[in-house]
Length: 469
Image 1: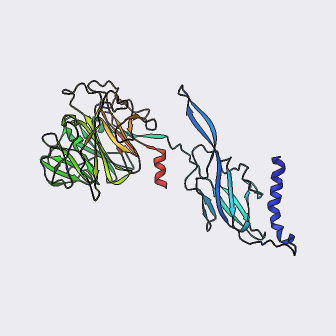
Image 2: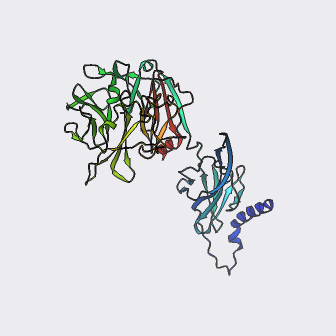
Image 3: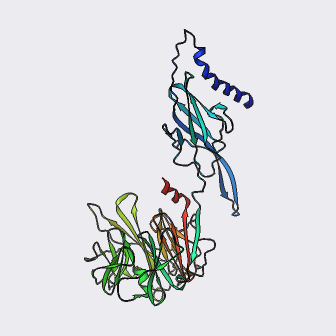
């Protein structure tokens, strides 16, 4: 039947050019000279998808689904039609159903891939848009025609795939025992400890293979544990050194903000610095000069004292409120029975009617199924909507293997899961003494390894698409 219908449609499309010769004196139909496409849409597509069987093997299947939600832009000047938001990965570009509307009853047809034959478009026949095609519209009076180039964009990557690249192995960084890394001033700055002092290395966010030592503009050597006492507030780094609060826009040149009695910085939002005082209590400051005691809803003994990390993100429900999550471990000699990290949450309200809320402790009990293990040298960063963390061998009563997986939380640190979309690189050297994670403004996730010197950079494909929108 299709072999009979297709030639008939071709003839019908061509016959429109003779319409002016066929009109009789009693023909009341009005014919126009307009040649324009008013709308173009893909109504249905066929998508190949992959799933894992119960045995862990991949299998594929196809589904037919609507694509009406994908908008196609029509550039009348350039005579181009395209969709800025690509169709899903796995779409079969050779089996696409489309619908076309024209101005004043113009007749639309699709030019053949080879040759000049034009075939009328049917909303029920699959068409091949795997390559750019030429769409021809002829005016209803048969006198004029116009051609458009139609490009149906299809994602070439699976948005859920996370791709890692080994940028290199740095011998100098291999001599470090631990790192804390920051993305600042178009650079990745990694503060590392060699067991005696903290120094720093830097690379461009677009490089990652070549690293240079950072020279500080002050006298004196930073202590071994200073690497984990540096925080980032806004576009500046902060640390407390020799009783002075210092800040830097690049990790090299540090400005003295003033004297402080705070013991160490532990976290920051875009508005405040958070620090422990000499009694172990949390205090906060907007300017680094005036500090105010922050309330906590549980005992101070539950605050982390080692492997301290934090994240800060704006609440989706209120742009004036940021969630600061503080994680880490308690001293193993005093709290040997701990099997999980300790986690605290602070809502930093910067609105006109701000309320200073206390830090809230996430209670862990026998009913807590999805927890963050008590891992040595925990590192954490924010990646998209997730907080992601990894760490070395379990300490105390925790028996987790070193760097067995990346843990993720989408609920502000309440629960932690093995996020299937972000796995450690297959060939990463897990003999590393520690691994530091950081996210840059191009949605790349970095892993910098102390003890091995490996530097990895990866990105979720769908995060990369954000840059092109």
